[in-house]
Image 1 (cartoon, rainbow, N blue to C red):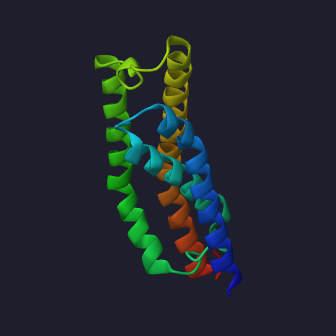
Image 2 (image 1 turned 180 degrees about the vertical axis):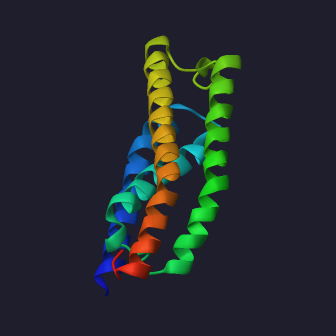
Length: 152
């Protein structure tokens, strides 16, 4: 198997493991968590796009010019989507309160779970937004380097 393909598979397995570890307490304690999908998107995006920012020459994207240019343009609406979903989470916190998510838990566990949900959601959301904003610029530099120098 190609080294880049093996490395990509290992990183995706690592990303899935991190997402499972982060979301496992929420899945076990909170039934009907409404932000599960976007939470997974934030975790996967934060890890994957950050990895591509720093390790682009070692990925399958390194010399695929058309795909890199397409990703530059796809990042624009994706960043808006990420920001919109973070805004929905913030509005939910302001209007409903995080206690609406964990209302059936005992008081002590409820406070811990509320802090955990808010902290991990904001951490991965801001990480994914920042990395998704920087990613197109990294891709543009990579396209220029590939065209003019033959490197990624």
